[in-house]
Every structure is written in structure tokens, then in C-alpha cells.
Length: 272
Image 1 (cartoon, rainbow, N blue to C red):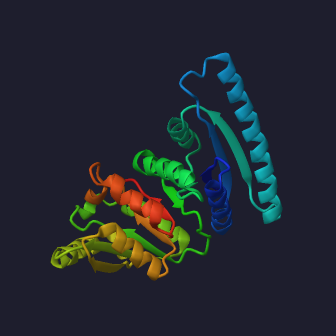
Image 2 (cartoon, one colour):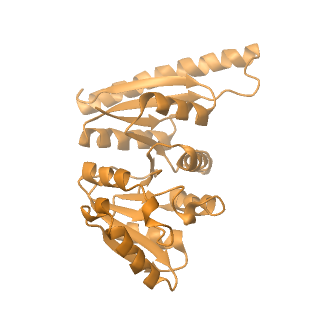
């Protein structure tokens, strides 16, 4: 059975991501695993801090039990729900835990209700999208789950098409039973875009997906893609850290941050 891992801290952003994950788990017959990480301070070996960490862990375990009960009642007991509390660095523990459970999908909130929540969760999500080698879905604060029928892939057509994670993209599209649309943006590069489309379509994995290609004549890549997916009723937006030159070290923070903090459509990061 597939496992969907949800990262929680009991904020409104995280709880909204849990609600989204519950509906997704029901739709794809997956179990739900809730993870809370008690971040260790630098001086965690001191006794008062250790006691505080113990209290944090106990409170988290109690809150997770309450959350599981609410989900159980909401789903009529049809969903398998598990939870885990870990002590340690947030990013390190998430990576180690993923290596242990090998989740089908990791879900977390990307936009908080308050400015502080937005800064914290946006920063966490941005980091995880760059460094976590597992498929990660970032859920905007006001996003609600609906059956996934239209998926957009933000593609840099100037990057070698052979490096795209075709198998991962194809598996997601097949699992969701969705249509794939490949979206690129640029200024004066339409000929290069059409050549890239030809190369991409020549790959057997993409031929069976029958993708629809869209070229947006706009140098403001992130804004144009966000506007396109929101106006055209897309259910998911895929981005490819480590594949797009648009998402490399120098550009990734600004490009991805705009999408994560401003796009109302859930965003998935796929790694090759």
C-alpha cells in the first residue's frame, strides 16, 4: 500500500495540508502517516532544555492522537492512519524518516495564515523542495482537494529533455488519471521551444502521455506560469529542482519562492 507522509506542526497551514492529504489518500487508496519533529536547540543537553523537549514531545504525541481521532471519525474508519514524533533537526529527521518509510508522497503546507507562518513554512518548504530527494507536494493555505484531472509541468525547454524524470512524471499522471500539460515561458524563443517539444515527444515515455504543450511569451517566468495554471483550472503544478536551469542555485530561491508563496495551486517537486 502507498504511504503519504504529512509533516505537521499543528499550525493552520499544516492542518490544512493534513485535510488535503486525507482526501488524496482516500482517492488513491493510500495510508496516512503524520510526522512531527521536535527541533533540538543547540544547548539541548542542559537539564531545563531537556525537560522542555520532553514536554514538547508529550504534547505533540497527545495532539497527534487527537488529530488521528478526528480523521478517523471524518473518514468513518476507512483510512489507515499512523503517527510519529521525532527529536532532532527538522530537515535531517525528515530525510532520515523518508529513507526509512519510503513514502509515495510527502505533503506539507506552503503558506501560513499569518505572516510569521508564511515565512516559516515557506522557508521550510523551499528548503525541502531543493534538498529532499522524495516527491514533495506543497499545499497552499487556502487550497482544497479536488480530483486531479489537469496537471501542468513547468519545463525549461533550453535544458536537455533527456534529463527529465520521465518515469516519475508518467507514474504520477497514470496514478492520478490526469491530463499532462507542459508549460514554458520565455521571450523570443518560440522556435527553440518547438524544437524542444519535438525532442521531448520522441521519448517513448512521453508519447504515451500525449502531453499538450503551451508556450507563454513572457520573460517573467514565475508570474506567467502562476497566472496560466490558476486561470486554466489546473489541479497541480510540477516543478523539477535540479533539472531546470531556471531552478538552479542562483535562481531557484526567487523563482520557487514566488511559486510557493503566491500560487494558489498545489505544487509538486520531482527530483531526477
